[in-house]
Length: 522
Image 1 (cartoon, rainbow, N blue to C red):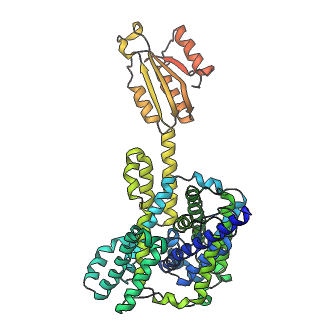
Image 2: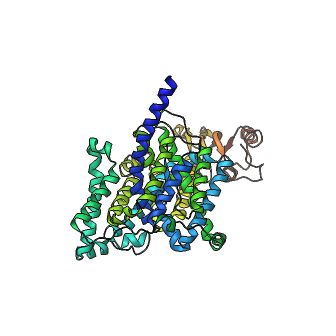
Image 3: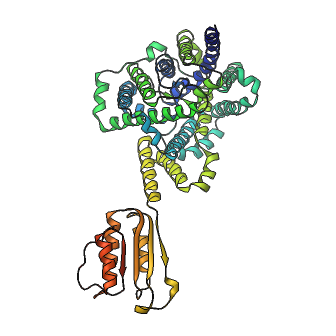
């Protein structure tokens, strides 16, 4: 009896949550598609597949998949370079690659990606998205991508001031952003109607009532928008540029989905995500989206968080949200034709702003400057180059930062305060600690060379956790130069111990060596 009541309660909760997610998903699906340079219906197709197929598969129980703003820039570039018909082949190949990575149990390894790189990637996407959609706010086509769009913003602002149509469209877009910001503060209304849908609906009604001359979404019909890839489209996959795009699709979509899964797991007490299964679920969804010529999908944190906060209990809520999207796309396709493009641009500008971690940047700089540099560097690289190359640069920066931090080594010097010089003075003791790599070698040698040339030196390397070949050779050469021409028995014993038995200690003086000695070892 209790199980039956629990099931009924779960069904009610999932049904209500699915409606909330559906209302959030509609404007986002359409807006991402338009910003990506593809028919609006293709965004709904990806959302439908994300609900009905990916939503049924195991992995994460409550996160919701669909077209994401994080891939908008990359999809737009791919469509411009390879054409709309080839998009399906690229997405299908990316989905197959995700399936292979999931089968090889590589999903958990995505958690090893530097958080700073992911935040920088999202920040770079946000900057490019804001720059591109700023033109859509005024019903103007952007001049290009990245730097070209950012560089053209001053000219766009001056042109908008002298154009009544551009001013009207920008008023609609800015008004949409204002509703998105203010609507959640009206908690009672926000529980009933999500902010994205409320903002787009108000903008659409305002434009219709006032008869404003602004551009609207072009509707082609669901069936006509679906274009499965052909043989010639698959032939383009042999090119280097296409391979890079496929890798970018699969890696960025996988990382975004699995990071989203980790975030969603912190929002509920239900079953935890199986990362390998979730990666395969995303791959299956992208493979089907590719066959339909639709947009690539990822797990979307906005929809997933809305699903959890709406009280979803099981995966039924995300499956039902896909059913509502299918019903809407099939029964009310003409409804898209009345939506102003400037309103959708406002939704995406707002989404782009939320991708930039402005509040976290200052605390991050104070506590972890290296992470902040990687974050900003990744974002700038994406704006200057493109998505794929920018992420690679960010990963290289993260690796270099980790190598620098893990190679920390320093010298503890004692005995200098004894004073004196020559044989009557006590030896200077130098103890090396940490990880000695070639990255720290110049500083170590500078400190050693600064020691008094007329004093005996005992160099102890037993405190090093790691000593690479470059450092070992350089320290050996330094010890060779400091050894006496005719070492006394005590010094000779210390040198033999250092070079032969692995205690990592050597006694040397400033006199040059007359004969070669065994290789320096630790």
